Length: 226
Image 1 (cartoon, rainbow, N blue to C red):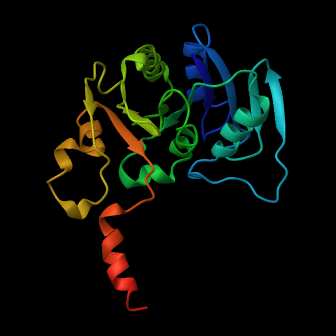
Image 2: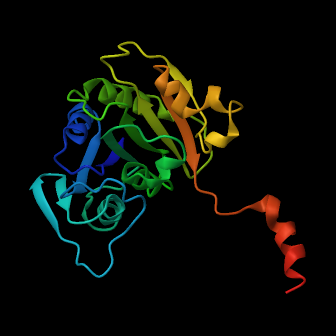
């Protein structure tokens, strides 16, 4: 598989290093990450400031931009092969619910949503994790099985892995993104947040859909009086 590997914590962060170590022998991997921590940059891109990259080794680069800048520069300029997927992470700390859209980890994955395979954003529950190897191995297993996944175009998989020290043998749950705590209990049992807290690996398919089809007629009727 031909992979663009990025993150929002910086190109030399232990999380992305663990992924590169796990993936590069079996796959073609192009690593490009921000030259400093860019957490919380969502899908932001850089304006007015020139983007500059630095090469550290074959297919390993940093960029003075956002995670989405990294994906765009890789796809349009630097990557020596046609990428099939973007893998973003591993992020220390979960990316759950409606907060996930604020994440640079998720934002970078979303920018690769039109490639051959659904992009992957991967995070671990702990903010203080030192060993990312378990999550990296899980991502490798996911990649090995993506050919068997029949999913609509323009999707990504948002994966959150529990702390391996607390939950050494987690099972997998396919979850929904938890948007609003005011919804109460009705969506809690299937939410990404609840299942991660209970020690499951949470996998949530995510897509961007800017259309609110159910409200088209409502707005059309309202607009008649304008």
